[in-house]
Length: 514
Ligand SMILES: Cc1ncc(C[n+]2csc(CCOP(=O)(O)OP(=O)(O)O)c2C)c(N)n1
Ligand SMILES: [Mg+2]
Image 1 (cartoon, rainbow, N blue to C red):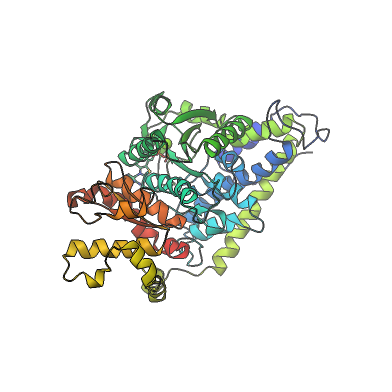
Image 2 (cartoon, rainbow, N blue to C red):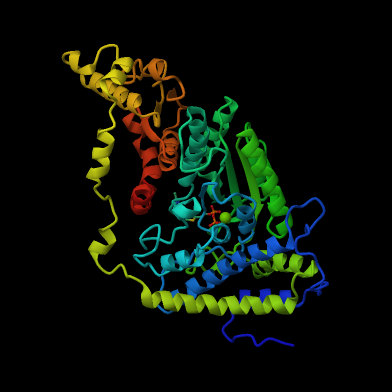
């Protein structure tokens, strides 16, 4: 039996289906789908068969993005094609582990969505491609992977800006357990974040990795899994061979493991082992995931201008979908023909879905629709928080003398007393920065606070403003109430990179998460 291929398959699709069709058939139908796929592995054919659904949908969505763009119906074309082995990373984690994802982690997102009953991850992505105001996390203003139900914290494509935040989420998990306060995530969760090989060189990424390792070096809990999705390119600039491994494998305080996207069982098993180590040890680790990039950086990128035809062809043999198909076929869980049919059925299904959602979408067609979710005023929430101040008994226990009976105060003293009020009223409040602990701040603003609350709640950080803000953003989105101090105004250009990415497109998500 043969299958009729549609005429509009592109080169990547033709290469994949041809390669799958040429795979030797296994012992179809004669396997135990609940048995491990390899000795020592926990991954079964049944589980891999589920993951492949996420991988296929991710690939289809990338094609759909360009199909929509070509017809003037969609906008964003940066995809995940070639990176779909990241779906196995998701499969090896828990759906409650908070994740901050690279823009190529579509496979991860869809695999995570499959772990949460009733969630339609493809719909989320399609609404982002269509810039629909109903898109669940950015209100259609960006194609962003994120959803509160999936513990996927949205981020923008400002390279590496989410890594300090991920470090902050990991910190929050550890600190909340110590303080005995509840977070959005379970106490034994780990924070996972993915990023590209070129992004690794960004000072923001370096700062986050350093801050995570610095914390771990001091024995602080830092359950963070960093995943470097290494496709060898940063738009048109090749990453020097061996650089990612050399840079990441010899870092103090950071465990390093690697896996190749062409070996799905290994990706799953290495991630599972590493994630459990992070969960148990509360220490940071990095997974170096080797991938390929298909279709250039984005739809507008002409790869042939800077890559050889032979290099591009060679990548097609490293297609993670081909690799998964190969394992499933060899295990007898499917056949080449059935896999090709499944691919083509999914392709049609997602195109139809895109057309349906295009018809239903709520377009961003006016300034007010675009602005509606931005910087919402929440006087009710402010009033609620303001009413949380401790009663006079609690306040007397905190302050030797109540602030209102102290007489005239300087501005610094007023801030100090206000910080005291909120620290005394709510155990989720943390104050941190450079020199805010034992010294009490370069300007004396935090004087005496650490002595009264303990060093778990008022503490010194390392000398890196981006990490201080990352800590705050990660702790805030996790459910703590961070009060970071930046002592030196000249640090502001460095802060800009972290805060801009949040303010630009994440106002809506932050509102929904807060
Ligand atoms: C701070 C910042 N600088 C530059 C860019 C433009 N830019 C977007 S993606 C990219 C390359 C990233 O390469 P890599 O980290 O390897 O990820 P890949 O796209 O290969 O998955 C660049 C330079 C940006 N988005 N943010
Ligand atoms: Mg890259």
